[in-house]
Image (cartoon, rainbow, N blue to C red; front, side):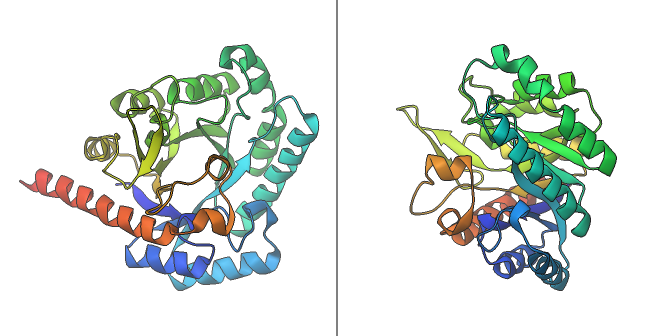
Length: 293
């Protein structure tokens, strides 16, 4: 059975508040993104000590470091060097928080995926060396703002990199935003399932005018009841981590969706996350009843 978690700043910049909610809904872990207005690569030793104390108080593990690694311009070497430094700091953080997975991307989209493909893959040579020397795994996520916008493109990158230290992060909700129109389940899942070691959870729907809006879990276009049933059938034992991106009174801006961080991102996240946690549990209860009946 898979484990359950939530990304810290989807609830609050106050980690204790996030941990309390995670504990109340019997989650197993928290993924660290922005905490106290700082990204994971910006945390001080004092911050890290406080994170460990808080999560220990609520018996929660750190299930991942949600870094913004390689959300940068592929043609700007200074930005790339800065992001290599971000990866180094996140590797150091991963030791202190006893976690293996660090999240990464495939550079800001600025042209045709196929035209940039070889260049994208070549940029992972230094990260792979860092990861292999430290026994850490980079989990790559597809996203509408980067070159790999769906599972099919992401798997092409992962296969070409061909390293045990680079795996897939599956987020079916991101497929609703995919300009190519990849269907998240079963299509996207079947493409990525042999490469995925971590999963994010969000939902969304496309409006008649083509705009995509985030929704609470179960109210969008991702077929989560069937999907969770398949995860159980396939004996997926990694984490499924809530990253709702839904807010009850406003839509998050494109800039915050692209680079989530800080209080502006977390505003009303507690209410939105609790709503989705309740809906997620109802879906799991329905699956359980169906299996028993």
